[in-house]
Amino acid sequence: MISLVILISGRGSNLAAIVAEVEAGRLPARIAGVLANRPEAPGLRTAAAHGVPTDVVDHRQFAGREEFDAALASAIDRFSPDLVVLAGFMRILGNTFVRRYENRLINIHPSLLPAFPGLHTHRRALAEGVRIHGCSVHFVTPDLDHGPLIVQAAVPVLDDDDEATLAARVLTQEHRIYPLAVRWFAEGRLKVCDGRVLLAAPQAGDAALIAPATG
Image 1 (cartoon, helix red, strand yellow):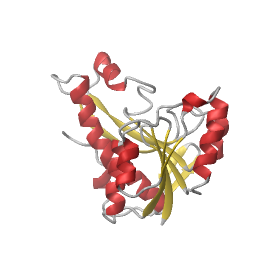
Image 2: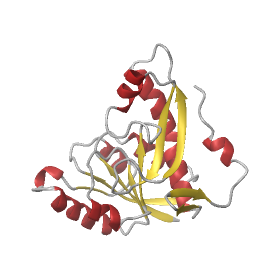
Image 3: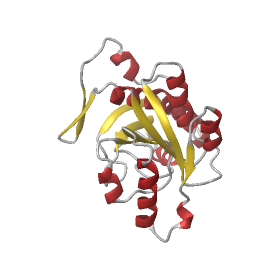
Image 4: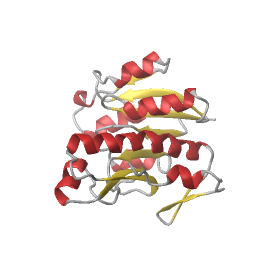
């Protein structure tokens, strides 16, 4: 069983999805701690309600990114995690921080990377008129939203979609694939090779788990 530290900035819906899988016994992991860069983040209450230790490293209390990154790393390392999970953590992390947790730092992004890195992904997808949108879990590298991809899920873009309806459909898939990616890591099945993620020891149900969503 691996230990996780989960970083949040807001409501923590992906945190809640991971907690649910851990508590259901489907994810062989222990959530050692949840850290937020905002003391008012609602996800802190979610974590505390499930008995998970929490801490805050408020980015507004630091002069710059390097000072914040150092304090955040110190807070993370007190939990000695095997994996650091970014779950709606809305801060860009510097190269030194990312390298410190190389191949054990993952993120979920609300687009089918490499399309639409950065912010406002659903708005941009609608503006571009794409017919397929989705979400991606990837290892974090210094190149923002371009790390090796672990798993993706696709959803159709409907003719009557607006930003809110499309975001809701994508979020449902985020809650499905993020715990899956963490489970694969916990099982030791992920290997990064030449910038690609290989899933070792294929299992009968893998294809169904990662199949694109249809609704």
